[in-house]
Length: 215
Image (tube, helix red, strand yellow):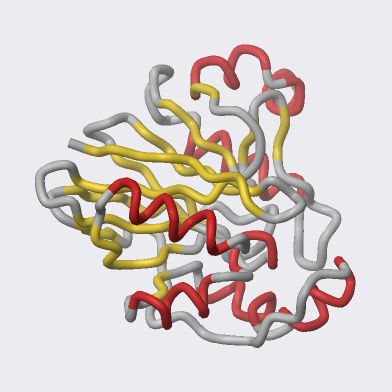
């Protein structure tokens, strides 16, 4: 059975998630953007064994602690899609712009693509390539638990920004419509920031997507 716990980190309150299999107690950490002491404390409290770090995209608030956490637990970094490599290569510039502690550039141990599959314990996470917020953004879906790790693609009542380099509003809206909104209405969504929601709620009420659909 899938278990999860959300830990908001960094001044941007980015939702880093621990996802683990209750049968094997093996799990992953998604988007460890910073505040690693909080994440490590949660790992210890859950008694899970961290096996992988998974990144949805290359923005600093989602990846800032990935390299350090990887070295601490000796686990690989997986994702995002290779189209976000340029974001990982300008991490020092991102840190300077946001007035945060400098972070070294890195490359993941494995890039993710559309239809990639991440396994941990008895769990399977399907990968959807959902560009728009960034060109290499990915979303993770566990169909058994009906859980979506949406990163900065879809929020409760909002969507990801597209005013960053290589962002594109129409591409983002198409990713939401053609990838996320094909899932069941009862799928729970953990966004990159803010409260959880459901696919059905966003289909019915999200003003950015509803207006796009009507247009």
